[in-house]
Length: 271
Ligand SMILES: NC(=O)c1ccc[n+]([C@@H]2O[C@H](COP(=O)([O-])OP(=O)(O)OC[C@H]3O[C@@H](n4cnc5c(N)ncnc54)[C@H](OP(=O)(O)O)[C@@H]3O)[C@@H](O)[C@H]2O)c1
Image 1: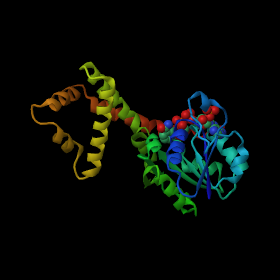
Image 2: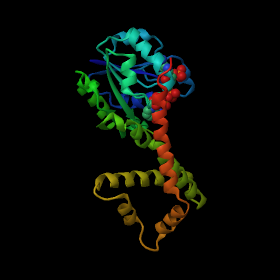
Image 3: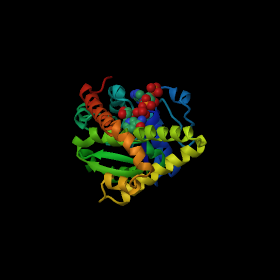
Image 4: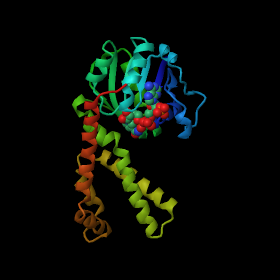
């Protein structure tokens, strides 16, 4: 039985824990280590199978530690890992921007895997981008990989792609929600009940994503043309989007997210 301890009880930790508790992978015991009861104020409904604790002693029994704290808190969290966790425990960092070099600088003797999940791990349709590195040689990596696969798609990539992957995949659901909000408001403006507009908007995005995955040889422009017949409704919308340079604005916004990930890495963890 592998003991997986999630450090942090925030948004990402909650998504990971929900994803795992919904279908607890075979051979996994799950615990949560946090530093305050702030998670209660954020409405975390505690499940009896994984009650958050403040006692770092729990780390002495860890096989796998999942670091889900903010970049500014990484220094203190790594000190706790160093003090309590067995040297052979495998560490999975989910922290944006903080590089393997920085992590192994703080914990030189340990096996560390750097990753970037997204929030859809809560519904087993997330993506976990994993940086290629020494941690993948640890005996527990195949098991950890199977745990991550329970949460959705796992992509192992070169570490140089982690910051852009953070911008595209880690933050990606937030851009989708901006579009969903616009669909909801427009639907509502045209008289659709909110609940129906929300349902239709979410299914439209899910269907569009499924099509993109089903036809990888098709460009997104080609897929757009499948929807937009000449002189039709979609063309009317696309003309407004083109005029207002929405695509360019989105592209610049996402590149800004990538730059921020790189900046977080340069700042390094602070205790
Ligand atoms: N949110 C996402 O969708 C997402 C996606 C991918 C990656 N990430 C990464 O995941 C990390 C967490 O993000 P988040 O959105 O979940 O942040 P968050 O909601 O602020 O949660 C951070 C959690 O870490 C806890 N914490 C801080 N220091 C700790 C320590 N030393 N020991 C144990 N727990 C500690 C915090 O406790 P307090 O409540 O007491 O502050 C809080 O529960 C970030 O590095 C982010 O880059 C997030």
